[in-house]
Image (cartoon, rainbow, N blue to C red; front, side):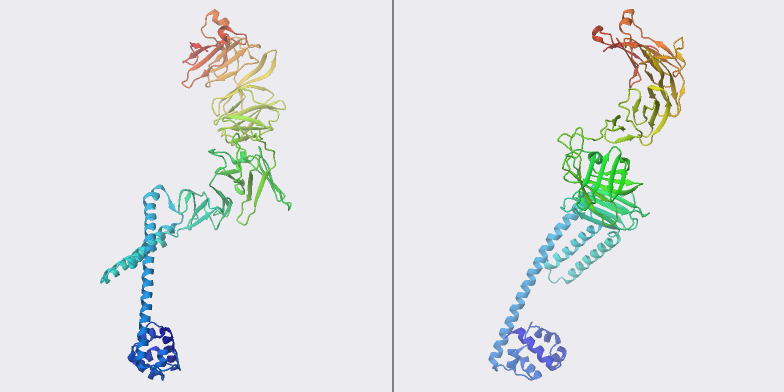
Length: 636
């Protein structure tokens, strides 16, 4: 006896009589639920009900048992046997279903246990170890989602694995408690979890992960530098608030361009970097690494060219040529730079992963390529460019600008300075006629930087008081600067020659109190005769606005006299240290004194160009009272 076939036949007969399950149940004295179980093959009627069914449907009992019309009749003994078989079949099916449900519950319970333990440990580790170390979830929702997983898995564990008999109230209490916890967690999630819009992206090879959070109310963007799949730290807040969408574009597997518009509708650019090309070099300038000419070779005739030289970065694209000065470039990490024009980002240049830096000067070796992409909120095409300059094995003499700290370099008629040995600044002007500056005619210091040079027989002074940001050029006239010295930003002295003849120089000592804009002659003469002539090799050095020194070497350099001024260079008197007559004949070449860190003045008195006594050594004298007295210190 087939239970499914029986149920289907009962349903068919009922519909032929236009009866509902409830109407049929009423006729035979049962409930409509019993009829429903019959028709679904989940149970059989009692043997005493078969005759009633047969009478209601006007069929034979054997037809009901066979589940179809026209079959042979079955006697009462076979009827009971068939019903018993059908009941056993239904019972067996029910037991199998119960076993499957039991296995399913156990499986759900075990999986819930695993998820509960993992989620609980994850949340516990975050709260105890990661959060105190400034880590956050990459999405604000994750904290509450994991809480909800803990609550739900705990519920499933309780209802699938924990057996509690005759304890219905406890089940109800625990269920209510879990529902309350879930409602509280969801309420906190709705209140706090949707404050930020989060962006999480991976590079193509999944080696780098970008995490951004945008505050929906203020437009403030937070970028996380260090990410570990679910967690992030080291936040950096963008200086400009975001209005509208954020565009991201991976240029390499460790460089991602981030473009957006600020509250004023202006373009802004940020580049997230996750690597380097320096083989362990802590820092280098991207603009220095790409000195030279770059080009992408296209079969469609739309070549893009980049020239990086001392003038800046020139980009030729779409029949347009633009020059971007180095001070208009902003570097990100050590592998990308953004080019700006009038504070608007225009291009991003990225060092591709095939770039390898030469260790001698941080220039990209042959074979390395760069990527150029225009900054835009729309779709942008990346251009891969190759260097067209020859690069041999040795790049030590490659056309790159490297300047030592607090020094200068002249290259291709352009004067460069550096205060830190890394960042190079171009001094405005044409210095093609200058090979190098003589000592005393230049100074590269953060407080005051200046150079004196000639152009068409006219002497010029160019100086900066703000580390090379702004420069002033002063025309000094038809003169020749022998020495220029600044005591501070404003006060300085200058020894200038008007004419030189036969080892004698005619000139003046001038002073400035406005940083070099104007100069006033202060010199009245030397010694009792008040001579206004100098030696061709004369030098001056001032230690304050009163105390200064002047040397007067002879033409051959055999001797040199030393003069001192205590009135700011107005008058000079000859100065000698205490020596015997024999010492005076040997040690007769006076150098300019120097000041030590403790304020002591040190004076070297040598033997001149023709001295060879005692190996040509010099005598050293010191003064602790501003050159009023000198004491012998030793020889060197």
